Length: 110
Image (cartoon, rainbow, N blue to C red; front, side, top):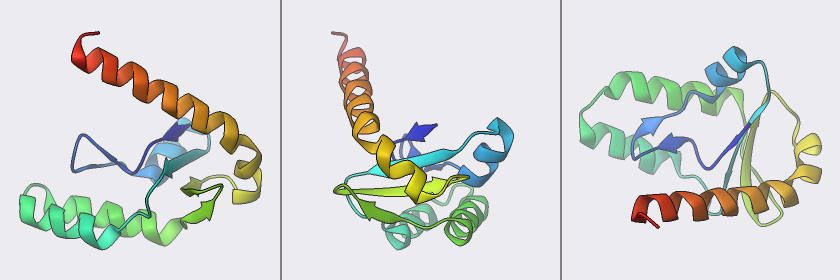
């Protein structure tokens, strides 16, 4: 399973480790810009909503997985080695772009 980044709709932090365990399949995040966990953590603190829970997820994911720069992207694999991910990236990039186009069109009512 591939998702774009470790947050959804703002500050909803995805527990990538738990997601991988429950689904039983590898999970990877793919983003264009280097993830900055400290900025996310600061934003979580400022939001004052579920702060401790969200910070605990950030800490757990950071401790159990690593971010790699490859093919011009930042990738965090969970439950799979980066060497296994690299050959899949060209296809994943195309699919993420397509998903982004579809989501943008749906949001705009197109």
